[in-house]
Each structure stands twice: as structure tokens, then as C-alpha cells.
Image (cartoon, rainbow, N blue to C red; front, side, top):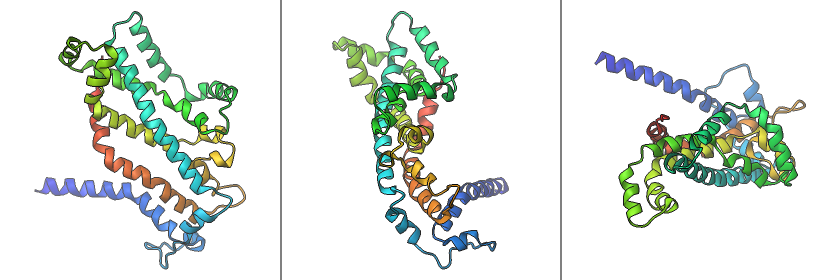
Length: 272
């Protein structure tokens, strides 16, 4: 009994520590600038105000509404497309016997060892040459290819029952038919896991959208938030209010998909 009590107390303390930043963020979003910067600590924002959230969408210098729409569009497009491409590539590397398959797999692994800063400028040059600057597709395109997700799907499909594939081939299905009708429908856990991780990664992206989306009409929500913190002014209540609005989709995504994220990574195994 004592051991169980200690365990729950420890879990409670860790949970409180984890939730503390969210509490501070929500508390400060309901305060005025004077309350936020006051040296006297307040557990509750008394009196509290919702003006920060109202001003968030009425401030003409910060297009928060369009930034949220841009981030949602980018994440909604990137998550399913990148997951599908990774699933197709992972299945091909795991199941299709072609010459040089081991070399291709090693090449995919090698790309994970290259720092993003090395490929950043060449990627920008290519996207710029294709006319992708100040466009949403220019932000989306480089994020559609995820080598880590390819390896996870490959590891998952290496454990896929061969009996299911053999039954499909007896029905006259080729590689594409087996993947589309048998492998993909039985990969829902991995798909949900990778899709959720891709959505979160796309939503939180900052540097690439900042460089490509130079026009305010293509700003994402992370770039819009950065405008509250400049060398000239610091709008702390607005920044915290924007952070609350920004983090809500991620919280919902995590609550819905946390089980799939854990199961998907566990099932992949990352083994040959």
C-alpha cells in the first residue's frame, strides 16, 4: 500500500511539474501587462480579462486569423501526404525484391545523419527556382518526404504476415494491389502514429516557413507569434494569448492520438 501511495504521489508531482507551464501560459493570457510584469505573484488572474484574445484577432499588424488558417492547411496537407509516401516507400524497401534495395535503404539512413543546416540553403535555392517563395506549396513541399518515417514503415512491413500477401497474389494482385488492399488497411496504427507526429511537426515548424513565407499573407501561426516579441516592443499578454490558441490543436491531437503514437513506434521496432 505504501509503495502504491509513493508511486501515485510521484506521478502526481511529475504531472504537476509537466502542467505548470500550461498553467502559467493560461494565467498570463488572462492578465494585463501590469499584472504579468508585477513582482507580486498571483495564482489567479484577478481581475481577469479576455481582451487579449479579442485583440489577437483584431490587431491589423498581426494576421493571426490567416496565420492559423495557413498553419492548419499546411499541417492537414503535409500529414496525410507525407505519411502515405513514407508508407509506400517503406513497403517497397521491405517487400519488393529489386537490385540495390540494401543500398537504397543505407542511403535513406545516411540522409538522417546530414544536419538540416547543410541542406537548408540548397533546398531554398531549388524552391526559389521553382517559384515557391511566398507560396504555401513552397512551405509544404520539402516536408512531404520524411526519411525517419520511411524507416519506421519499412521496419513495420518487415514484420507484416507473408500469408496475407500470398493470399492476395493468389487473387491476382500485384505489388500495388497488395499494398493498397491488404497492407495499407492493416497499418492503421502506424498511419495514425506517423500522421499525428507529422501534423505536430508541421504545425510547430518555424525556420523554413519564416524564410519561404516572407509575405504576411503566407505567415504561419509560429511566425505571427514571433511578432509579439521584437527588439522595440514586447507584448507579453498577447504573446501568451496567442500561445494558448496555438497550443490547443496540438493538445487535442495528442489526447486523441497518444495511444497510436506509442503503439506505432513500439510496433515498428526499428530492427532489420
